[in-house]
Every structure is written in C-alpha cells, then in structure tokens.
Amino acid sequence: MSNKYRILIVEDENNIQTFISALLEANGYQAITANTCYQAEMLYGSYLPDLIILDLGLPDKDGSELISKLRENDSVPIIVLSARSKETDKVNALDLGANDYITKPFGSAELLARVRSVLRNSRHNELGRLPNAKFIVGDLLIDYEARQIFVKDEEIKLTQTEYNIIAFLSEHSGKMMTYATIIKAIWGGCADESSIKKLQVNMANIRKKFGAKPGEDYYITNELGVGYRMNEKPD
Image 1: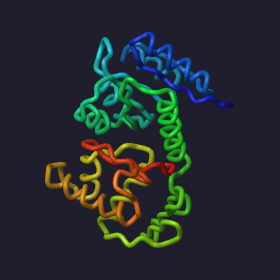
Image 2: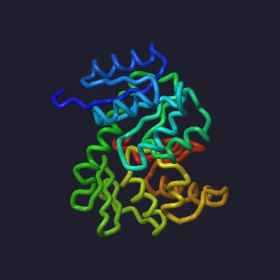
Image 3: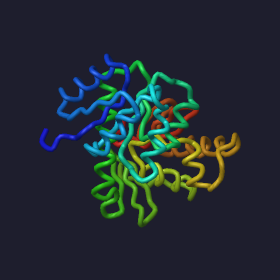
Image 4: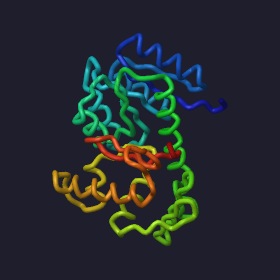
C-alpha cells in the first residue's frame, strides 16, 4: 500500500499491543504504539495519525479523557478497543466522539473490517461525503435534494421523521450513532424512555418498508441498548 495509513495504538498490555501492531503492519498500515494517554498525546502531535485505536483502562488516565481532549478541536477517527462491555461504557465513549467500539476479546478479521470502515468513512468526509447530493450503498439510493429514497429502483415512501432518521444515519455511515445522538438531532430532546421507544418504533417501520426481515441487519445495524449504524456495505 502506497501512502500508508498511520494508526496510533494506545494500549498498555504489551501482548495485545504487539499483536495489533503486527496485524496492522501485515495488512499494509503503519503502526505507532503508546502505553499511556500522555505518550499518545505526544505521538499524536508528532505523527498526526489517520486513526487511533484506544484502550480505556490506561495507567495514567482513563482513555475517555483522551477522546474528550481530542474532540475539542480534532475529528481524527477513534476506535475504542476495551474489555469494558457494559452498555453505559459503550454509550459514553460513542457520545464523547468515538467512531466505533469493539469489546475484548476480538477477532482479527473484525478489527481489520472496522478499521477499513472507519478509514473509508473518514476519507469520504475529507473528499465530500455527498457528491451530487446523493448517497448510494448496494441497492439503496438517497436523493437528498428530492428527499426521496429508493431500494432496487423502487421508491420507498417514508414519513418526514423516518426520512430524517435515515438521512442522518447515512450522513454518518459506518459510525455507530447512539440513541441520544439520534434523538437530539431529530427531535432536539433528551434520550428518555419515551423518546427511545419512539425512535425504536420509527426504526421498526423503516426496516419493514425496506423489506428487512426480523433480526436482519440489511443496511442498518442495531446494537441493542446503544444505537444504530448505517452500514457502508449491505450485510
């Protein structure tokens, strides 16, 4: 790979750090490693990596503090890779600005797929995500100017709210959007039990209109208790 993507790995467990570094290098990326938040900040300033893979349980600070600091003035993609599996940990990291969250233990193929997805999404942002004001993935086409959605060339009739949800998810495709983020963007309120239920009902209607079967993640992935992600390739 020419012009290798630089990936900063912030992980204090040496065996995991070494494994991820070797995996990335073997797949054409340039890996930079840090053991602490402090080292990560120094290396970030020196190398300006294209992506950060971040553990939360670090010796000097919690990794969430690094997310918050970077998000003050930077949009560098961040994938959290953590042993913390509680929904609250995932939601907090995503709300702070992480692009994705992977729970340890993890598979090599999954990690590489998430890396590709996040980098692809970031690349689209740099080049302009919406050429000709359209979003296309698989058989799905969204025409933003006409506010129309087509699946297999057939127009899907959505309510105004349903369209707004899909448009918002597509503009952040590849990133898990939490319930709170979606609700704030669509309705401007806070994520309480009532608003989450309203979102889930709308998503169920959207999936039905798209022709998705129960449990199928075609176009949209749902992580229960966390949020939704518009897939960049249909599963």
